[in-house]
Image (cartoon, rainbow, N blue to C red; front, side):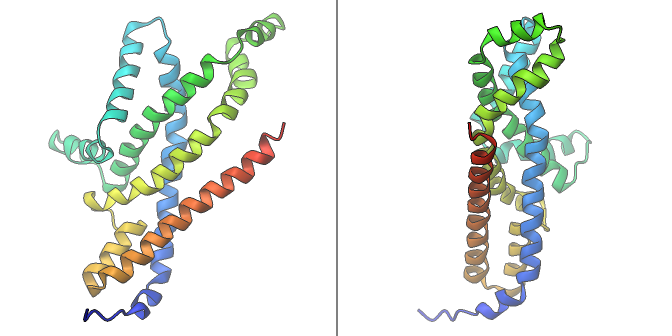
Length: 220
């Protein structure tokens, strides 16, 4: 093997790589922040008496869970573009991953809502609380306790899926920065090895942080 490793090149590129890490994390967080209210709406619509809402929810979940995430991103970036609706790389990536996150989290929220005791709702309504107040102050906090770790898993998944942004021209996330340096220096192994380690450490950081936060929030 005649390959000579040149880790010094990667060392000089670390500031840009760390900037890419921050952008990757920001993208993933954005998809979760947008995905949670969408997933709650989808979960509620799935049990709605309105057939149109049930159909929309079921269709969304089925597409999100049974087609590749890359397909969903492509449909936003290239599909809408072919219809004359131009969407930039980052919004397309966020929209595609958000669509995916909402589909997966909708089932988690739906399951959590179904095990919620109805007696608590009747007790809250008997005290004069409105429907929105019951949902916000009684139901949602307990549901969030159940779906906290699924949300954490989906955040890790969103971090990893954000690497797909490179195929729609995104250049400022970790994978985009890594690819740019790879093209300029041809040091494929070094840059992608470091990028892989960064993805791994970022995922572990999120997992450990969520576990510590969960232990503090849900101690009882």
